[in-house]
Image (tube, rainbow, N blue to C red; front, side, top):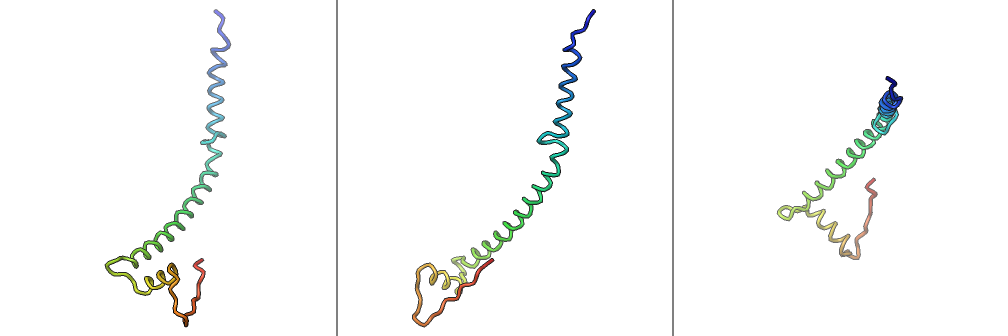
Length: 96
């Protein structure tokens, strides 16, 4: 009884394609280093965002209506409303 060549080569081709994808595919072994680099980048971005979040949370705490910081409230009123005395000098500092 003669065997159909597709019965042998078909599963072998599928196995070879799956093996190639496991090594060189988008989720394969060779992509791990790229994902590690991406993970490190995302973790550093997360750390920077957490620092920014802490600074913003501190400002929110200082503007609590029950116990607002007088200096910060004065600064915001002067900056946003443009309320200045004629003898005042504004010195701005870069926050980077």
